[in-house]
Length: 118
Image 1 (tube, rainbow, N blue to C red):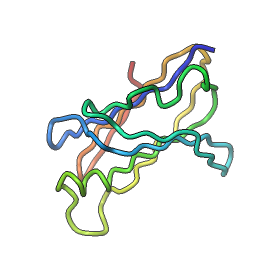
Image 2: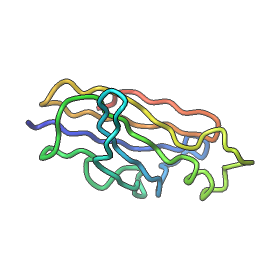
Image 3: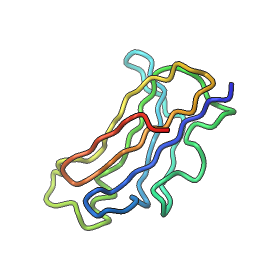
């Protein structure tokens, strides 16, 4: 297999990459979640290496959990508790064992969006 998974986070409220944001990757099977990777974004809002590299890549259902609340607090954008956005889970499937999957997060204190990038 030569597939792999990457992600990055852009802070759309401040117009910059979201540096220092913790991301966890889970393999999902039914109601079972198993954490298989964890990373923190660099100054470019990306992980230093693919969050699921070629040597451990497999197809299936996965969930990225972005620790947005910690990032928003650290960047002074949090507001009152409880936060509107705290942990953001994005569940997605990967069916092509040879593909590069890219799942970015566009984040602000009150909204987010994602898409399959390239």
